[in-house]
Image 1 (spheres, rainbow, N blue to C red):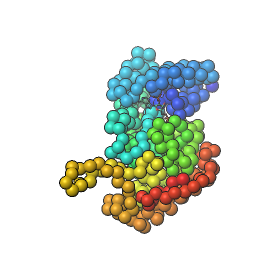
Image 2 (image 1 turned 180 degrees about the vertical axis):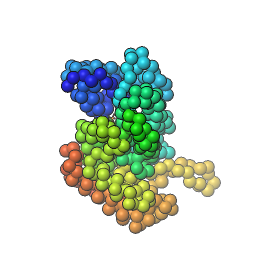
Image 3 (image 1 turned 135 degrees about the vertical axis):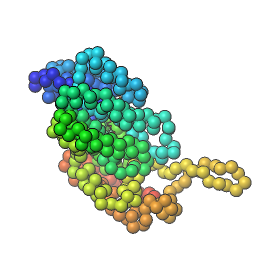
Length: 343
Ligand SMILES: NC(=O)c1ccc[n+]([C@@H]2O[C@H](COP(=O)([O-])OP(=O)(O)OC[C@H]3O[C@@H](n4cnc5c(N)ncnc54)[C@H](OP(=O)(O)O)[C@@H]3O)[C@@H](O)[C@H]2O)c1
């Protein structure tokens, strides 16, 4: 396809969904600016796209965990005379575990990359798009953004921000020529689960969609100016079931799907007579933790088990799933948390 002269800035373009987005833009004749930390991967992908599609590819290695990165990117674009028509805020990562035990620096970095950098880049590039009366912004939210997610608490919260922020912007920008689309994938086969440490969680063991299918779905939605894109039947059904579930149930379901063998409980302090407070690992018991915190009544636990089973079965039947979806789970063990089934 002939070069369009339009440019797409894609963050997190070194691998996974970001690299897929870059390929889609290039295949449509758009130039690309590729942002991520791994320079070698950006340059290799950029070279490949230039050779295959005859577009111009610029590799911009940046760490979006650095607060100043969006300003540096914006200045670099100005110096090169590039005014992106498309912005894809895709860079992001998650972490799995009990929040009290996760490393604080890493969690703050996550909020910086998933939320602050996305807001910052959008705010820096949006005025130019508005002045030109044309532009497309695609933000990577998640199905995780529709429900609180125990054991990935701040990741889910970061995606709730992205889902909400993007839809509000879409509304504000109606009639301006600029649109904002939020893509809300569920489990997708990329490096994400290894980075987050949840590749052994029931969520990912149940199967993941292929990155090409997810990116193509989001790309088309963005080009049409749609407000939201939820890829795959399984994800759509999951969200519908969450909408009609009590929040105590959806919390239990999300917690169950995120649990791995490493997230057995949280550290707490227990007063021991005659001694100072000692940290102690608490094993969650249905009778104490779940009921005391109001997270799940026995009825809710039954319902949430049903929902998890429904989700796992949905994974097998989803037409858009990758090959992992059909894999049979060999063993089944129930956590004493009550609401989770782990294979
Ligand atoms: N995979 C899923 O199951 C899933 C589901 C829903 C939503 N999402 C969202 O989809 C987006 C893309 O994820 P993915 O699945 O493609 O994961 P991925 O394969 O791990 O790719 C993540 C990308 O983000 C970049 N990145 C991470 N930290 C960065 C930083 N500090 N500065 C700059 N770039 C950084 C990585 O590049 P470098 O490491 O080279 O910096 C990489 O290119 C994320 O926002 C994720 O939350 C993923």
